[in-house]
Image (tube, rainbow over all chains, first blue to last red; front, top):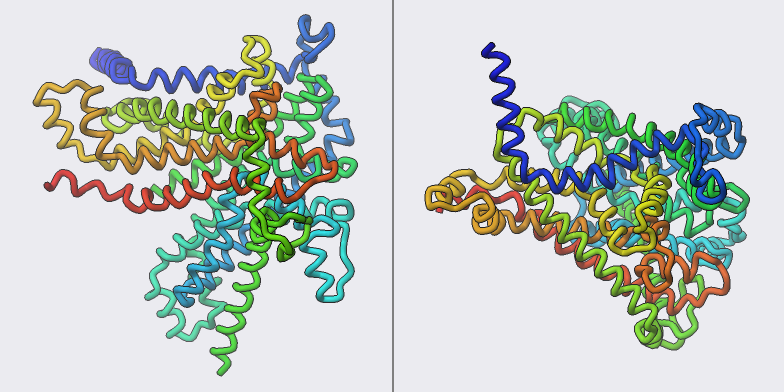
Length: 296
Length: 273
């Protein structure tokens, strides 16, 4: 009996004390949770934006998923998303870590110049980043001008290597985030540990791989998860620079989803692609939440 | 000797990386001051402020900046108010669902929100708030609540509970306590939440791009996209000037948030005085 009444007491307490949470919960349910459930629901229907299927849409089971997974353009988008993701992750993490690691014991003035240079691309709004990189990698842009001074012939970046170009743009935009994370993590690695390793005869490289990196492995995990999640959601940067092209060379999942759902008016198809993004995002998000939970 | 050359190599590589990172930005600044700007980085032959004048004399542009400001300011205010209320029970009471709630919030902060934009579009169409600035504000607010709650709750945890008890003894209710005692003490935290929300909204492109269509409702981010995303002939000078004006709030707010961030977690002193 006491167990039962205790639960009711707790429930009453919870309800009474949660009044201030109501506006937040209401807004999140309306514009966050319901859309997520609608994504799931619509992905099983033949809902279209216009025409007869706009009003009288039907439940069609797994047909959208069947269509999606037999669609070569879908697989191309999955592949492009993976390339974009892996390229961005490697670039952002390596450069971010490299800068954070080697800046540690450098001259103060030098640090206060290099830091803001890397931060510049991060602080900029997405579309400004797209414009800067669009001009930078234009056939008669700054990148080719630099190559010419070294007697290397120019490249039509946005046509010959569109994926590489948008990856480089995303690296420009995202590296500072990794750098900041690694800076604070490296700052917490006590120098007495690394110095002890050096005294014991470990080389600099050994100290880095055997001592420093194991010490910051939680940061590496969190940073990689957050970068993965934000890279999965990149839309504006690619859309403004290439529009997903040329052809479909830079069509990642968000762009293909937008295309199918809102340009071709096949909402059911579009939401099925959204479901893939949502599921992949949810998996990474759970891992992220768990790693962060373990740290506390 | 060897030690020294390793160090010098490191300096050189770091300097090259920094230079590569800052070059697109230098281009942006020089192009905005050039009467005859091109895609490539050039010293302007004719320096001018004309590009800025051009950008600011267009009503369409001014409207774009204004709309962006309105969306971002209202959204940030709404988020601060709602998360400020929500943080109180999460920070002060022993709610049985607190851990589950906080983990769900954390989970939600990391979800790629673009994944649900198609049904959101359909929903907005059905309830007739498509192409409405209010709709955009509502959606942007809702999606930034999880991170806002997370921030506010952590900042509120830093405000000592003793001060509140003093207020309670003097007969203050929760709303008064929140307003008169807690809010002033966590002012840096409120600023950080406000700035984060504002910057996120100001820089956001895909939400207004997808949910708005009337030309006179488009914020600066979508206008900038329209000026160069269609890839016709681009006049780089005015475009660079537009970009700089558009980027200035983001840069200033970032610098401001750094100031508040370092102060934000030093609240323990208040109960000693």
